[in-house]
Amino acid sequence: MKILLLIFHGLSDSSGVSKKILAQSDAFKQEGHQVFLCTYQKDERGHRVRTINGNTIQDFGSGPMAPILKRISYGAIKKFVKEKGIEMVYIRSFHNANPWTIALCHSLHKSGARIVLEIPTYPYDHEYKQAPLWWKTELSVDKLFRRMLARKVDRIATFSEHDSIFGCKTICISNAVDFDKIPIRSTLPPASGQATNLLCVAEVHTWHGIDRIIAGLGIWKQQEKEKTIPTLHIVGRIDEPEEKLFKSLIKRYKLEKHIIFHGPLYGEDLDDMFNSAHIAIGSLGRHRSGIYNIKTLKNREYAARGIPFIYSESDSDFDNMPYILKVPSDETPIDFDKLLAWSENVKTFSPMDIRKSINHLSWRKQMQIVIEEITNIEKEK
Image (cartoon, rainbow, N blue to C red; front, side, top):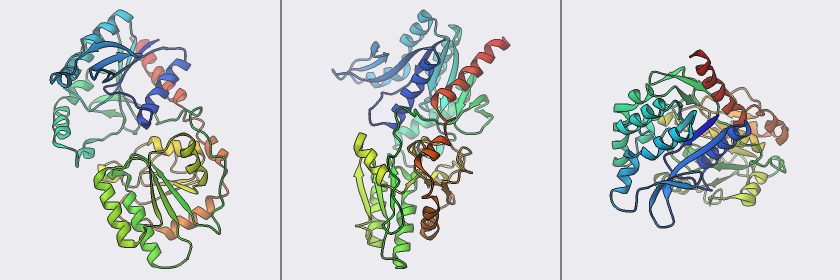
């Protein structure tokens, strides 16, 4: 099958989303499909361009009209799909339903292509609460047109458990991992007799709820139950409002020695952080975005690394796993008495045992589900 993987933004070596997209592309290729990856970015001249497999198919220039044209001009994509005989277009939603994306999908269908629209997070409106005005304006447009767009696609791929989204039938898949790209932890440090190391790896936003664990640690420290105080290591970029909140909590609870900001880390530096950590921290504030059921990529990456972790949402792939700790989906500080007791209990799990528990969560197996669904549509014709 000839597949166009359509992304409305560029890719970055440091982005988890970018790594996921490339892993999906590789998964399709591993199944024998021919994949064309379409992205949008600035080139070395500063021109805004749309590319397929690295080759420019549309140059919008660098002038004031370029950002507008890239949102409304999809002629090069339509031409490519028709000329190449693309059989499936897999689109990653950019929350950009509008008359032009609707016209794009209509044209792709006329060319004979099946269309799958992936909505990574659903519902997503609450994510815009603290967004700039421009983003909120784009969301308002999306709200007006997303049901019309949904009528122009064959299926919506979702990491939720919704049977339909915006009136369109879904393909329920899980976020997954590329096991070849994620190294397993080489050590499992004992938690007893030393300070517990907590690790959060994320581009931190309000829905990660890291303030809950900082507050929980501060309250636990004030009780002076032990002399050995856990340390929280935060790896990744942090939104400015969150950083201010964290610093105020750190100052209030005198946690300067126990909260360490490392910034983004990669390669061996990131591996070393995992090798020295006892437990990892998933999302603790998805409820702030109105989301209670989600299959986050981060949970799967932690499991692939072989590290126990905590989170607050419902995730059917992990809710019953013995190496995870579910905490309430609310604003209460994390209970460190419970967390540390659990940490002692899970230290017997080897990294390989944890990793093996998610063998079914490879991108290759998840993308097979998409292909099978689209193939069944063709058989029903």
